[in-house]
Each structure stands twice: as structure tokens, then as C-alpha cells.
Image 1 (tube, rainbow over the protein chains, first blue to last red):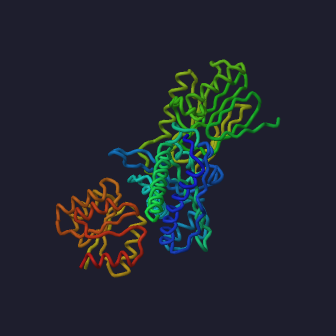
Image 2: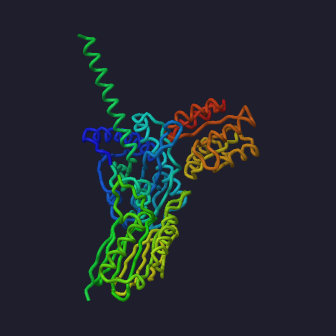
Length: 225
Length: 159
Length: 119
């Protein structure tokens, strides 16, 4: 696992926050409601502990998973994965809101086909919106997979998302953003897992950008003098 | 007799020689392997994420994350506690495909790797609840070797 | 009556577009759920307008676009994309798409673009 300084981690979190802001705006358009968003919480943790970041292992959740790859020298390299997740009750409420109908009076454990489609599409749109910021910093065109949907216990669902990282690293840097929909009991989470190589790429690029900024600033100062 | 309980998170494995309920929950594409020596009443269980350890020296990965190295470790510890391989049987669980739209089936690959490994080490699989599209919860009662499998979507069964 | 083909693999997206369009009186709508079906439906139905999603199974949106433009150089196609697909949109316009809308879109955006392209 690459050693990142606190400065670098904070910088990356800022970029992701910008991306999350775009996602938040997109969600607002789709739900026609105000969205409250948290600043991304950054945690370096053993990948076995990642599911616990979002809840209890047996919680029934709905999740959309997208794999992110980047185009580099005509090849596709792994960048990471994005998971859009809600507890079942929130998922039902959100689906109803998106489809412009009232949530079912009777609670069930099932989600209808249209609900699944609505949640998948939301995950898809939000991830597209959030990745533009990272794409700009990496200076790489990012490609998302089609959205994958699952509805089951939290740990069962999230453990699948660890598969890519499992053979590569002990720990992963995780960024978790929470969204709340105004006036509704809807809590949604966005979890970004970055592949260790992309993380390094990201921090190198940030350093370059920072140096460029500094160089520009110094030049301005000297040209004024 | 009051039984002890132990919870196994992803990448955790345990060998016990006293009556214990070993628990692993939220098993999706992961695999849970329960090993039991009826003679010595010694049991081992692991909650693994993948089938094969890539053996990457640089990465220094948790061996219990991978079924093959986990099984070796469990068998090693069971041998230390006096078990003879001939008396050990295995029950395997998990390897489900939870996500729609998945052209790779990690769960299936995991189960395949586990079967291969157990065949390699000569341990018979006497029960299994694998594959499918839903998550499982596993409770292994090491007093009698029975395993209960629960799930949100589907029945609770005993093996 | 204007015939519009809605091509998107998301049932939800097709429903949203159906609602937006039928409210405005565009009730002759056909749906296609993947790239291949889109081309087949275009050949069969000869719609006046296509709302074409970019990321689809069984043939990417831009591939379907190419096929349709080859068959019918006057085809009126509006690409529907998610944020961050600017390069693909550029490519699509080069290939002959008459416009695009970005998800998530507001009703007015879709309707004004539809009116604009239909002319």
C-alpha cells in the first residue's frame, strides 16, 4: 500500500467531494428534492473491514456496483469501484420518489423490477456525475461498467466489491459520502474504492498540478516585481 | 453445556477443540469451509474471500483471505491438536452470485478452487450449500459437527 | 402522428421518457432495450425520431447510430448520455446525431430538444 501523506489524502478527498457534489445535484434533479451531503469520510482500512463501514453485516440492502477503468495508452487499466448503497427501507422510499408514486403501505422484503431499474439507473447517473472530477485530475478518460445490482445482506453484497482488491493489497483507501433526501427517510451512501495503482497515479498528478500552480504563482510574482 | 460462540469475519479462520458455535454471516460470493474431526471433536472453519492465494510476496496478504492457504493453516492446527487427516470431513458453503449482470462468476470460481484444494489434500466434502443468487448465514456447532444455514431469501436448512 | 423510438436498456429511463413525451401529446412510442433491437426496430418501424442511449447491451449506442445512419442518412437521432461522456457525444455528432441530452435531464430539456430536432 502506497504511503500517502495526509496532505495528499486531504487533496484527494477534496476532489472526491467535488465529484460527490455533482452526484448530489444529479440526485436532486432526479428526486426533485434538496439533498444533504456529508464530506467524504476517508479511511485506510483492511479490506476485510470495508463492509462494516456502511452498516451491520446482516442488514438488508440494495446496492449498485460499477467498475471503473481508465484509458491509458490504448489499454484499459483498473481504477477502482463505486458502490451506491441504501438500506432496504431507504431503497423502497427512494424508488417510490424516483417513480413519482407513494411508497407501498405494506412493508415487504421485495423490490419490484421497475424499482430495481430506477435504482440501477440512479447509481449509473450518480457515478457518472461524480467521476468527472477524478477524470480531470487523473487526466484520463474513465470508463464505467454497466451497473450491477444486488439486493441482499450488506456483507454478502459488499464482499463482492472487494474481489478486485483482494489479491493486490491488505488495505484500501475508502471514501464514503452520505446523502440524505430532504423530507424523506432516505439515507444513501456512496463508497469509492481506489485501486492501489490509480491511487498512486492520482497523487502523482496532484503533485504535478500543485507544482504547476506554484510555478504559475511564482512567475506571476516575479513578473510583477 | 454452555457453548462458546465465535464470530468469523471475512479473512478469519479458527480451530477449536471445545464445543463452540462458529458463526459467519453475510456470505455472498465468499466461501465458508467447515472442517470436522468426529473422533477428536476438533473443528476448523474459515470465511474466505477468494479461492486461490496469488502468493504475492510484496503484498504480504492475510492467508485466511484465500481458501487454499486457509485450508492448509486449519489442517495444520488441527493436526497439532491431534487430528488425523483420515478422520476429517468438510462441509462447504457460499459461492453465490448476488449481482445481476456479471459475466464473471466469482462465487463459482471460488467453489471450484475449494473443491480442487480439498481433493488435493484428501478431505471429502460431505455436505454443501453453494451457488445460487442469495446470501447465507452459517452457524457451525462444533459439538456435533452440524451446520445451520440461514438466509433472508430462502429457507433455513441444516447440514 | 410523430413516431418516436425510445432506445435504452433501463426500463426506468424508458418510463420517464414515455411519461414526458405522452404528456406533450407524443403518444406513438416504440421501445428498444438493446443496441441490436434498436437497429431492428428502426428498420421495421421507420420512426420520425430516435432517443438513443449511449451505453447499451448487445451493441453500443454509437454502433447502433452508425448502422442507422448508413441505412437512412436523414435519420433524426438524439443521443441520451450520462455526465462525463463528452468524447462519445462528439463522436456521435460526427456520425450524424442531431443533438443530445444529458442525464439527469429536466422535462423541458428533453421536450425542447425533441421539438428542435423534429423541426
